[in-house]
Length: 404
Image 1 (tube, rainbow, N blue to C red):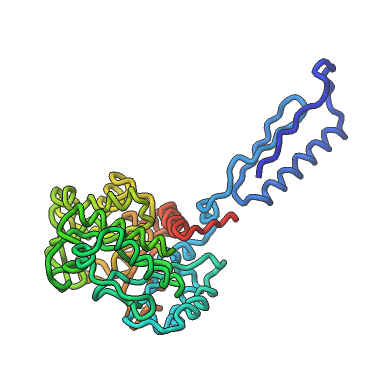
Image 2 (image 1 turned 120 degrees about the vertical axis):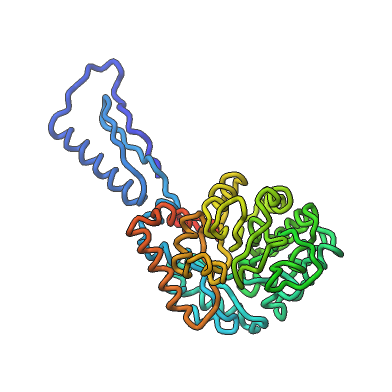
């Protein structure tokens, strides 16, 4: 809120006159009233009164922003926003308690969605505090990785798309699926996979990619990944490009144990270009893998500030939402972390939203993660500013404006 300066309207030639007590009182009263109006209109604006001939000048120095609003949230509320809660797509009401407590998203698990999924998700979203929206995400990649093809239509494995479809055809077919996803109130797809692999085999414990990869050609993956991403956006679904910095030819599948990518020197030439292309094309979100990257450190990438803050944010200039891969992966526990401690480390490293697997203890796991994050802020192991930054990225990807 900007108010015009109050200027002295007396004649420039008139002799100066000292104000009497009544005049001074009126001016102080007016200044106080203006200050009250400014403070009431903005929870973040500051007042600056500058005396000059004719009286004080009042200005609002800071505008309202999401960050300034988030600064007023409790640590617990901020922590909950960074958590995506797993839930069966056949029973999304199971996450009502967590959504009511402020969880930032839910992840749908299953292989056949109910016909009334949209109405069920609408009911779930009605429990979001402040009606700020909810990220409803699923893995709809194509081929054997599809959660709701019975509702939205089926896509072939990305390897088939890469070999038989042009980028334009990929975009058109993905848009058809995404449009139906959005109609069912699913607004985020954990796809496309832009790992460069090209091995002609199903994904497995020893190979996380296989047919999930468009190709073994970096240029093909770059073009097809952007096409898939744009198809989702055309259908009003938020794409999540994965798995940074590239799982092609990894030593193992991190879901089942410790895994390494190819050396960083190789990834820069082979695996990074598809992510660079996606970022240049406006990728809103990127998922970071749980693989260790030789040459960038000894922690899984999702827990590494070098991988996320230095490379993804710094060198590649990515400014969007960063999600972890599942912190329930065996590679995470093998690195010495449980899910709550891994969530804290991921946020410290630059991730914005943490994911974990569906199990029998989702409620207690969610609470434990939120408590670990809150305690980390309290004891100084996680900067509150980093938590606010993460929350800001989550709101931004949903186009939520706390000041409107």
